[in-house]
Image 1 (tube, rainbow over the protein chains, first blue to last red):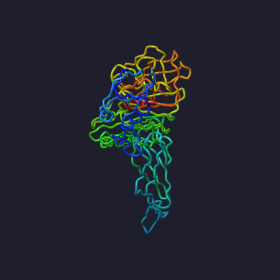
Image 2: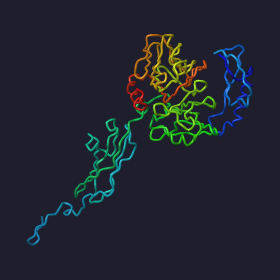
Image 3: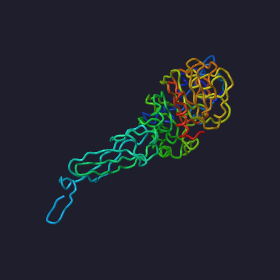
Image 4: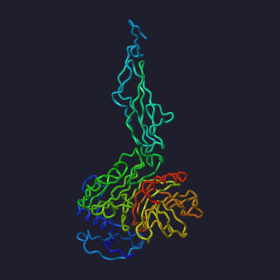
Length: 74
Length: 365
């Protein structure tokens, strides 16, 4: 399946990117809020080697830059 | 009778006794929850009179006596729903008696999980259980990402508060609260993955009632503490958008017929043909009883048998729940959901009554 987004070969990089987006949008707004992240990353667990990715959304382009297109086995 | 000169006077009993018969000054009042199954009380009201007054009670339905309902309390029954219920108090003392009638109450029907208790989880945009006093949903608004609980008003979602909170923007579900009493709330901590309930200042609705919309891309609501054991009985009101695709919660083709998660609550059909097309673009009430043997399962759509045993579809059991989702496949439902209730028991003997309750609220078929 072709995905447009941001691909990471290291899970920590995906975690960092997730935090970068959350920080940009000031999440969580309050300590008791459920919402912790703006976007989340997913694991391409059926690919070898495994990688991690964040699906593109216009709202994160200004944070993570230009997305790329890649294949994910689902 | 007393003679005085040539006159004869008749005296009433209270004149003889020196007492005063009862006179009502403040009417009796019914208190309590006017709902089927609830016990309400009737006060005596306020009376004057001597000697000491004793009271008797008679509950009435539309002005007619209710059989043996002669105590100060009365438990409302199905026949009382939407009827006029009053309580007549009769005050008696040694000087006479008098009656007064209370205010009128008009009981509403019992809530679904009051009558059919023991659900493992219950998500809805209407109130399902009287004893549940929490909110319906927690919502994040798009304008500033602030969150707020939205409660019930008169048994339905407080849409006024919801719109006030969201303003002209969008509203997204961060938590769909479990009304079963088990606190199995379904949550989504990622903004981009939160299902929508308000779109540009307008509440998402199906058939005139609020609905939660999954975008079919990444929206899910999850609970990881729910424990399901066979047989489970699942009742849900959904409206799938479009006519193609396989999606979590309910799959129109492939092997999964009713999938809550790919790793836990699988309700596989064993590869047989199965196309519940009425789900597509129509509000539908789906009912499933999962299997203990692999074959004793049941599946209904809008009170019609879809499939009913006869093949090994596996069993449904697990410890997590994901709405709008088929975990592990990236198959997510572009659909509306208004209600999702699971019992960890076989509720098929109650299926018709439960369906009737749901259908009377949503007017699905």
